Picture 1: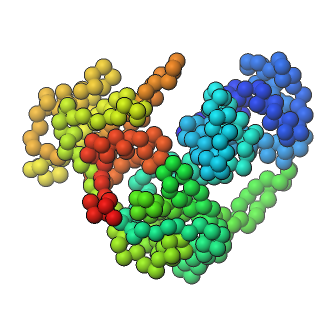
Picture 2: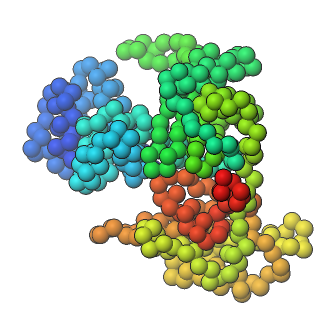
Picture 3: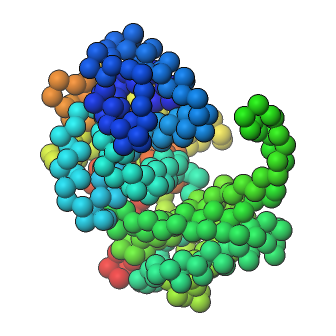
Length: 396
């Protein structure tokens, strides 16, 4: 995730040469000496120079640009930008950005060279950061090539608009923006139907005005032809998911029905994790150095709803949770919740990064399906923990 935006913090993170190039491209002259703009005094001087710009709208535009750059100044954001470059078949971009040090510097470099990548990359990063528990997945779909021509996208937008307008009186207008995740082959569709009108208050120069606003709400579709699933994110509109599936099937997959689709009710297999010496089967080229169980929740087999949560400090003893479990010696139990800390291979001169995720039986996991989360899921699949599609579906 990106750091919370602060102008001064942003200036400290972005090299002066990139900041100077930004203002040069925007044809904005600042009263600063770029060759001697270092340290805290340099940051203050740049901040004062920008806030002294008499054009308030120009100030706001600069601030918006810097906030957008900051939002992608992280590993996921850079990965999303590279994805868009791959989609555009821009082979120079991944090479160029790899030569820039630091996430903020990389993001600013990308903004200066390919600002048109921003919308797609921001959308994909947003989808990647949505907790998996907020998606509604349909698996076992019949094989269908997605249709993503302009008329198909327009049909999807019209279908969404008609549904919400007739049923709830909102969604009079709708726009759908399609993007592709090149590595996974997944197709993303970001839909923005019009929400109910609102009365908002905003500043216009020195006046505070009340104005009618027409906000949009968001629906995201993720379709995988290879894995035969359709995932939908529809916050506050979960009752519409079934109809949204039908609308998507007709507009994008050209299917009148989804006869083979079933709600994803696969279960995680947590039984192997009762063994303290369980092997996660980490592939040598995965970038993962280790995976450590940090919490276990036990549900007693013959104890009604009695549960035991076991947590221990694994900093100096990776088996600390299991040592405590052995010491407690509980009666027969099922594992119904687990937290796992993944340690990634360290980069030269840097501390190893980690990620802790949880799985709750039967099928809740807060991992997503892209980037390092996808790598972790592959580890879980190799270990027999990640839910698998039925054999017939895999062979189809």
